[in-house]
Image (cartoon, rainbow, N blue to C red; front, side, top):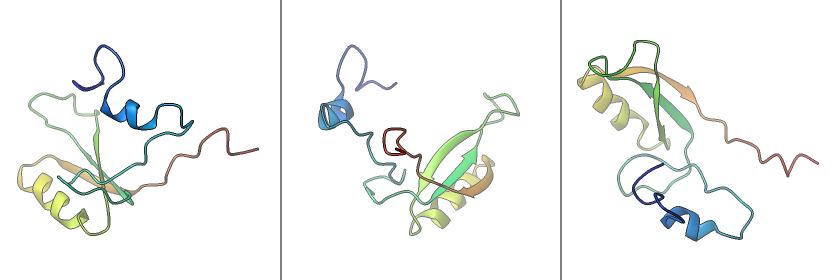
Length: 92
């Protein structure tokens, strides 16, 4: 949930309302709308429990930049390939 989805349809939901599909998983780099191919797992040890993992998604082009950003701040834990979730309605 974010500020755009509080109290009703948010921007993301409006774009996909009635389309019967989930929004595409896109890169977390600012202004990048490319499909995500990697997931960067991280946590901030000052505010998160050690086992907690937050996730940023990344396209191939921005993987190194995002990893460096997290590593420089001591937040990066690991990078794993991102497999797009399958829509349960498609597996028929």
